[in-house]
Image 1 (cartoon, one colour):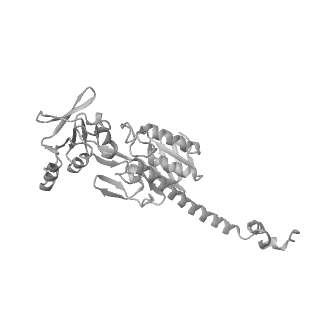
Image 2 (tube, rainbow, N blue to C red; image 1 turned 60 degrees about the vertical axis):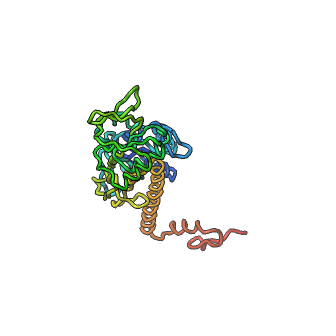
Image 3 (cartoon, rainbow, N blue to C red; image 1 turned 135 degrees about the vertical axis):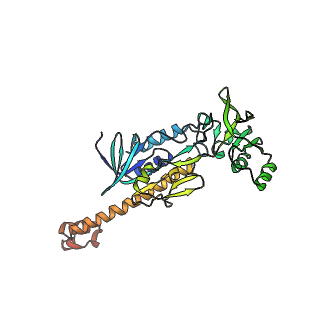
Length: 340
């Protein structure tokens, strides 16, 4: 076990949000350690999209570049799993199998997990031709036959990228009269029946197999997974959570401050609908907010020390040196002024 390490901020999660926060903090001359379990949500994807100047960059390359930037300013990256976190009189301790790390503040950017439907082949094709976000993957599957699992909303969205969209009802209720009209107007077919497996030919998605045995030809499948935040550390500290249409996220203000003093969040753990760019931006915002909070604490402590020291001759002399030339005051004012 390593010795406990004291830093200004412990960041849990080394994705776009955590690394952006860490970069902001180390450039503010804060000591930072980032703990990352190497389990990126977007790891299966071929590229990050919608990020200006970084479009198509592999997710692993993006975070590797980010880690190097943090390290070049003195930040430390520790690749291990954060197992628990606890409050101390001076901040927080995060325990890992590589030791314990102390921080005056704690930022959790641990992201979320996509709960995928239990359909044979979905997990194996996830991030390739089984996708969830049209803005992340729509261009890559444009003009192909796209199946959408159970969601009218997603079917209408993906229709922007292809004229060949089929709503696979699976276990969802029938569309309402209004929804049926919308689907018909947009040329979206509706297929009843539960999808039991995906048909793969030559390492490509070829169709969705229904429990009736029918094969619906598709080249891509869009799903809407339930989004589950990695919030174990946060719940152990007593933070508040809030319901979201797609799952549960941690409640925080615009700067990422949670209900527990000293604990911040960024990225998908705070906003489960955020893409990579939004997650990175929230990391910058949280990093700046944490630095401002630390500055307030540093200032309070400095004032307390100043008051405890009293107005000694040395303290008064130090103060006088901050006032230019003839404007000097205090003990220095009793000394002869140098000739002009």
